[in-house]
Length: 228
Image (tube, rainbow, N blue to C red; front, top):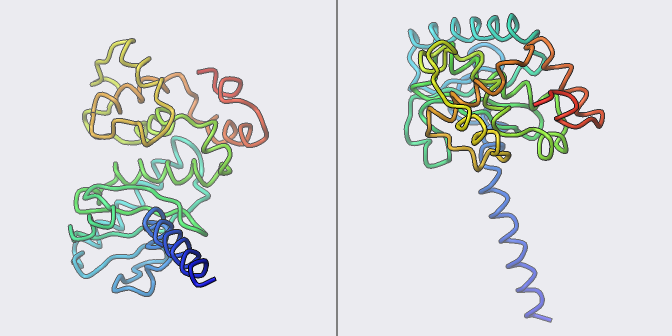
């Protein structure tokens, strides 16, 4: 009996430890209000490493990013929580110095580092948040390929390498990136991969995106909806 109890405790501890490790960004998203991060306007949290002047520029960039996404794809409904820091110590928790979007337990969340407090990165991550907000977990895991998720984000990212007129990728490179379904397999350190994703969604009418996601949730396949 004692061995059984010890075994159950070990299994339970392992499960909790694994959960905390794999969902650490979601936990950080939900618990940020009880840390040393300050809520500047609603849903935007910055720690002391983000100085007053930088916060002013940040809020302006956030406003412009929302406007850009609203203009290209339509009105954002997700209004994710933005968490901002210059502190590289947070890299050990899985955050990066640019930006990343992650789903919390009750909301979408965007983490911004020292290189991500600009209109382009914020707009890019806002699209990721909106796509996830508008789809259920089944659709996200089984119907949305990584290249499509990244391509729709890159479309609102006006950094020089991602402007369509500056992209030079072959059809073979586009087909290669379209073979990547899971985000864990997407080569996220490769500019070419993002460029190929951008080219792959070039024929998508951006005003159709939200309606298309709704159709995916209603049971249609990705090929039926987007024809890609």
